[in-house]
Amino acid sequence: MTHHPDGAIAELMRHWERWVGLAARSLQARADAEDAVQQALVRAAEQLHTLDDPEKLEGWFATIVRRQAIDQLRRMSRDAHKRRRLAVEPLPAPHPSPDAIAATCACGIDALEDLSPAYAEILTRVVLNDEAVQDAADALGISDTNASVRLHRARKALRQELLERCGTTSTRECLSCDCP
Image (cartoon, rainbow, N blue to C red; front, side, top):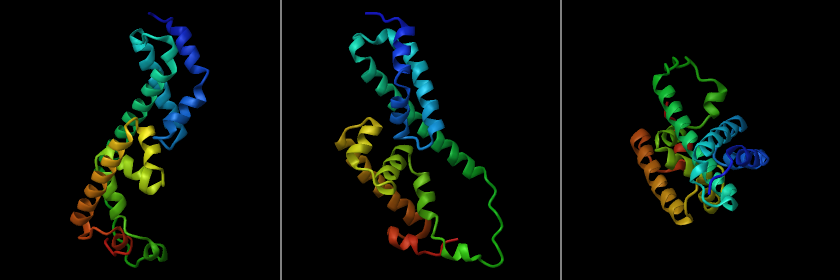
């Protein structure tokens, strides 16, 4: 069955806020979520001919939105990593400021950013944002089992990154370390 693209896209556009909210589960910034939905609409318009059942339009589009948000998150993570690698390191201050003394080690955050995007995303959602594993799985479009396995592997990879960076596998030690 073919669908009139303008009618289907108009139907999807009526639920714009729902789609932006869905994308925002992966992307924190509203502008990024809106970009993801716009790209998902373009993709949907291109692939609408593949949808067999008009009753499944919203579920089909929700999948496209989730995948687009995840793809965008991965791109953003890769871009941020490239920018960090190209950035010039600032010269150290001759005397640490009071803020610097109170600050905790950045090794953990840097290590997190160097993990694969899939691992960084699950750790950010579950550990940093206190999101339930099941909610993270839904937002990522994966099964609960897959999310649990990914979280376990991500934690293991983070421990390895921390060990290589500052010699500890304990996040508690990392938070009180004096790494530069």
